Length: 356
Image (cartoon, rainbow, N blue to C red; front, side):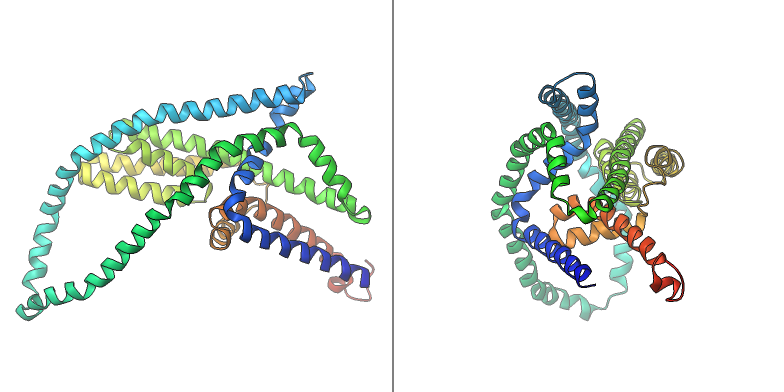
């Protein structure tokens, strides 16, 4: 019993130290976490090349080079399209404002007609009382812009450091895994290996499968909204697809933005219904075809658990916490199932008189 308590104390202290390091070093850890994520995603491809006789260094260079070339190519392809859509959208904003005025004007007149003369005279006083609050908000915004240099530095480190971290980790992945395996406590090594394998299966199944789901939905939404002719449809479609790893959020947020833009552009016409139908079809395909085929039910990550992990990670560690949320959820889920299995096999559950 004393040994078990000592082991538990060791792991709890280790978890506390790890959480403390995340808080203290969160601003500089992001490119390293991103590099680890890229290496983890691409390792199966490098392993396939290695089995065919390609050296680990050459295979890493090929896979990583193709990955970043594809990413850069997508950015270069999207930027001109985004520029065109932004320019077209900006040119139509005055028309949208006039249409909104025409729609809101009667409602404003009706509201003013119901307000007394005394209340109308108090409007300047109320506006003055809120001017200080507005100034405070503006000052906070300006302060955020001034401190934006740190965000630019983080972005630059993400761009330049992430590929280096990904390369070295991907090249030395078997060595890293072997070193970690040698550090495992010998008495619990087999149990830990079993749980790490379960975590890897869960995490790989979710991340790689969900990445394909997000990509497919981004293409579907962008093409659908583009064919309808929705201004800014490409941006909304890609954004909705990329955030679809959060269950239902991509459809709700993207659909809400698209319908709002469609209402301003098309009014209450059939095209507005077509915009909404794009997201209805996307949600149906995601729930009935894409997620079951590409992700599957074996991973054991419930949508509510994923949402909770993302919210908790964001609240505790910011954007770094968002990046670590799904791996942490996978680890916690596997460990919770392991603990439940041990509990159901223990005398605490069965009773002291029952055999274990």
